[in-house]
Length: 135
Image (cartoon, rainbow, N blue to C red; front, side):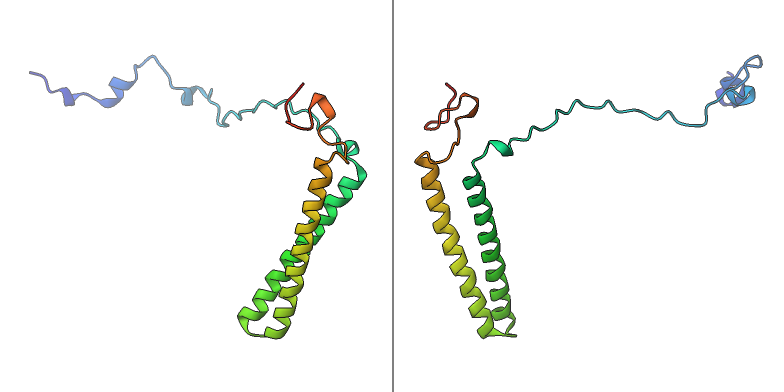
C-alpha cells in the first residue's frame, strides 16, 4: 500500500506544463474600485413664500422667546445649584419662567388664530383646513 503523504506537494498543485500567473507577469496588483450608483434626488421647492408673513413672524418670535426662556432657566438653575450666585440665579430663573409663560401664552393665541382661519394654512394642494383630508 502506497503512502498518500509520500508525494511532492508541488506535483499535486501544478503540472509541469502550466505556468503560474506570477511567472507570466499577467497579474493585477490594484483592486477594482467599486462605484456606487448616484440616486436621483429631487431639488427641494422653496415653499416659504406660500406662508403668511404674520404667521412666519409669530413662529420666529416664539422660537426666540422659548430659546431665551430655556437659556435663562438653565443658567439660573446652574447659578443656584453651584452656589456661586444664588440670588442672581433666582432672578435669572424667574426671568426664564416669565419668558416661558409668555411664550406659552403667545403659542396658544397663535394656535387660536390659525384655527379661526386668520392665516392661509392647509388650503394648498386640495387640503381641507378642518379635517386635514384631501378633497
